[in-house]
Length: 601
Image (cartoon, rainbow, N blue to C red):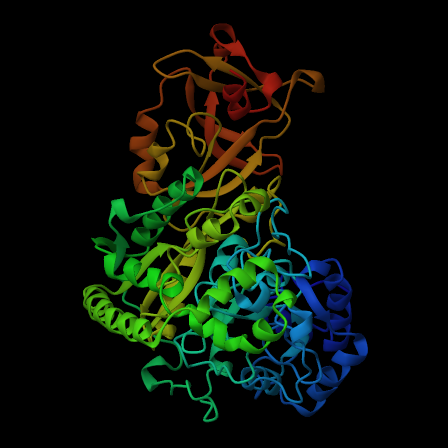
């Protein structure tokens, strides 16, 4: 029995059709795999608990059920019948008799729930560390935060346990974890996905969000889930213009913040990745327009500095009044401030928000779509522990305004940093344009061709997974053109995209050659003596073919362009050197890479 290449909806359905799996065998395998991620679950369904959902498929038509046999996870502030909902607060726990409206739609369409996932307590946080069930580790590096509050849902999707997962998104909880775990994170327009059966955070702003590996899968889930719920006072009808696949113009304009409004909180890798993402949007037909984001950023400040925190207090009033010790200290500190705003504060803030909304809508009407970083920096667990409230607030810099201003948004992966950590941007536009965003997100993902989630990525062999896009050539760089190095701008200014971080085959030596700037000379050694050769850190960049000629013209001897063999055995165009480099250069092979050599000086 062979595993599906990935857990996308189409891959699973193809696997069923091929006879590789049945729903019974796939779910059994995934439940076993799910146990490898204990901090991601608050309740993982047992074989007995999941059996009725699998058995029900026998009475469902594959043709009529677009999610037939597709495994998914549910954030544990969303009800699943018969399973406790805790919102990551054991004292708050209750067992619902029926599932949330949105969960019912998914199950009726054939989806199979595997469990309830961990979250920042009462969905208060963007970090993924504020849970008595433990901090769920990032799917790429456990030293970094997973992002929250929908931490568990993002991790089990990225790790190949489920095809998609439900989160919630009031201030970024469906987008920040998507960014940090290399996922699509759809924050639908407010009211399109019912919040009946969802523990409120700020009920007037809450959205149920979707984590998926691809925008196509997010679209499939959205089309099933976006049913009008007449029992939900905040539900809205989905207009015909936002149903089905919606075209997006081949040539379009996208707004970005003015340079002085960008905030990366001293993260050079994220800053560089953001400017690279702009190049990607331009490569698929976009024209950048810098706009004043002040109305958006001013609106963001209202969420926690204004009276909306009172909504969080209303949602948890019973437990915070009768048993405040049941809450984690940081959660209680934030929510308890919600009993202080007065009615006059609420109206004053509403008036201010309405003025900002008018200004923001005027900006929005001037372009086809807005784009910003999803987050300005990816913090480590240690950094969050040092400043838990301040750094959580910094994570919301680009996200907090979205629901206050009634925008639809989608987080899209665009790159990996030199730390091998994911980066992504958020595309957003007016409410009820969700399908338009899904279309452009698909175009962007198809262009950058990043691997899906965390399961397809081995940074030692990632080069073997990537092929050049049409109109591009892959180029191997080994020295001053690496990410964060002095000449990297020669790649990014030409619209190049970082595709892989890997190593050469163990067949080279490296020499430092003096010049205007010290450069590495990579020499292939034709010898059977393994002691004389090494493997070296390199990056594969995908460059527009139209830019390749001007790039090559700037290369000075003894360096040149030739063929470089990678660790996987793949041979790619890249930097090599003439043989005499060994005579004029300093042998630095012991460092196994230019970056290590520079850091040693």
